[in-house]
Image (cartoon, rainbow, N blue to C red; front, side, top):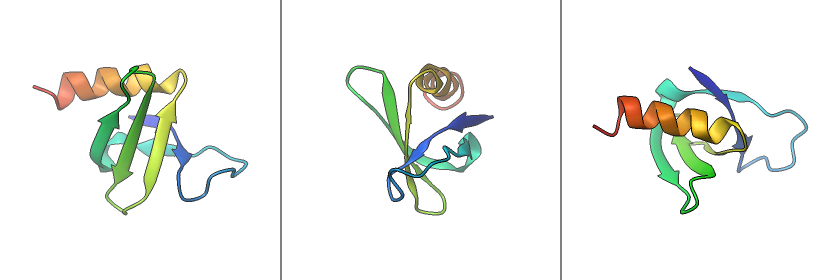
Length: 66
């Protein structure tokens, strides 16, 4: 599964890449459940927000938070 994410290292870039959820090493859910900060296996940090955040949260709950 892929979700759109904003790179924290390259903030302001014109394109918003899709990241593969299989490469997520850590995920930190914001207190309002509207965004998720993730670190990927290549050591890059991304922010998943907007309509992509609930999609990622549902995936994390179903597959990882057991």
